[in-house]
Amino acid sequence: QVQLVQSGAEVKKPGASVKVSCKASGYTFSSYTIHWVRQAPGQSLEWMGLINIGNADPKYSQNFQGRVTITADTSASTVYMELTSLRSEDTAMYYCAREFSSGRSHFNYWGQGTLVTVSS
Amino acid sequence: IVLTQSPATLSLSPGERAALSCRASQDIYNYLAWYQQKRGQAPRLLIYDATNRAPGIPPRFSANGHGTDFTLIISSLEPEDFATYYCQHRVNWPLTFGGGTKVEI
Image 1 (cartoon, each protein chain N blue to C red):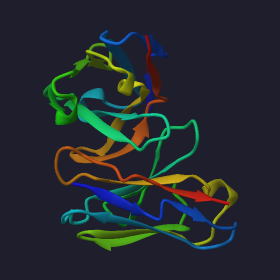
Image 2 (spheres, chains in turn purple, red; image 1 turned 90 degrees about the horizontal axis):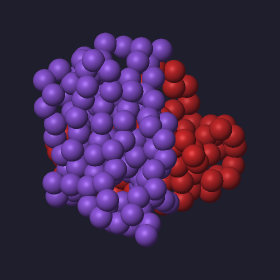
Image 3 (cartoon, helix red, strand yellow; image 1 turned 180 degrees about the horizontal axis):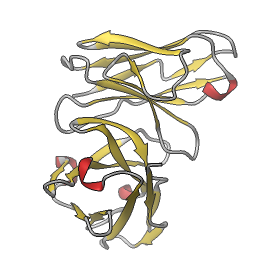
C-alpha cells in the first residue's frame, strides 16, 4: 500500500533552517509528483511547492520568496523540504502529499505531518 | 485564485443533509477537489475534478459545479462526517485552498 512517512517534529529558533523528509513506498516513486502543504495552528492549508520526481523539476509558491527548497533522492525514495530564515509565523504542521494521478494535482495520499515549532 | 467557502460553520444533526459552498475568484473549469480533515489528521481526498468521488469514498458524498461555483453535498450525515472540509483548485500555480467549512453537531 502507498505510504508517505515523514520525519519527526522539530523545534527551531528564529533565523534557523529546517529540513523535513518524506519517504515514499508502495508505488513507483518516479511516476508521481510530490507536493508540500503546510497548516498553521487553527488555519487552512497552504501550498508550498512540488517536485516532479521524473525530471527533478521543482516549482515553488512565491509566498515563500526563495526560502523553500524541495529535492528528491530517488535511490532512497525520499523527498526533502528545506525552509530557511524561519520566523514564528512558520510554526505549522508540514505535510507531503502525492498527486492523485500524473499531472492531476489533487492529493489522495498524505504523510502523517511534521510539526515545526519556531520559538526563541 | 481565491477560493471562498461558506458557511464557515454548519451546525447540523446526524441524518441531516449538508450543502457546502466553494466559490472561485475566476474560472477554474472543473479543476476542484474537496477534502475532509479531522482534528489531528491529514486531509482526506473526497472529490476530485469537481464531481468524481475518490476511491473508497461512500456515495453519501457528492459534488457538483463548474467554472466558479461548486457545492459538496453530504446526503445524510453520519457521526464520522463531523469535520472540517476544504476545497482546492489545480488550474494554475500556486494551488490554493479555501478557508474551510466546519461541520459540527
